[in-house]
Amino acid sequence: MIRHNDEFKVEIREHMRGGAGQVVVTNFVDKEELHNNARLFGQITLEPGCEIGVHEHNGESEIFFFEEGSGIYIDNGTEVNVKAGDVAICGPGESHGVINNTESTLKFVALIVLK
Image (cartoon, rainbow, N blue to C red; front, side, top):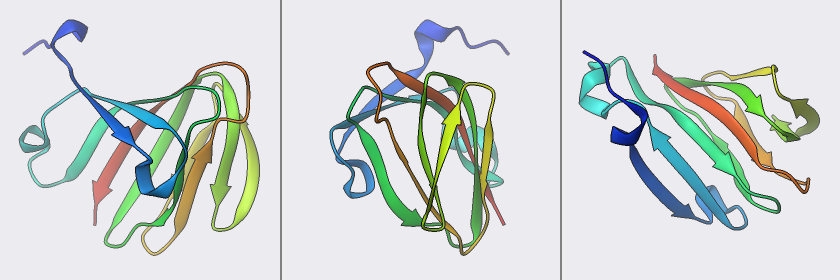
C-alpha cells in the first residue's frame, strides 16, 4: 500500500501538553495500522514561539527525528539545543518537551512505541 502525502490526516492541537501556541500533527498512518505496537507515527510542526509542554511517557517510548530547523528539547528537565539531523529518545517513565525558540519552522518525525 502507498499513502500519498495529500492523504495524510492533519490535526491542529492548541496548547499541546500545556505548551504555547499551536502544534500541527501530520499522521502518516492511522493508529489502527500500527497494530497495538505504537500509537503515533507522523510529523510534528512547530512554528516560531510554539511548543509541546513537558510531559511524561508511561508504558511507552517516543523517538523524534529532527528534520528541519532548530529548537530546544527538554530532556528530563535539562534543556538541550537540537537541530536538523538530531534524534531524541524519551523512554518509559521519562519526560520531555520541545520549544521552537527560533524565527524558523521546526519539523520532526515522531514515533511513539508501546512497551
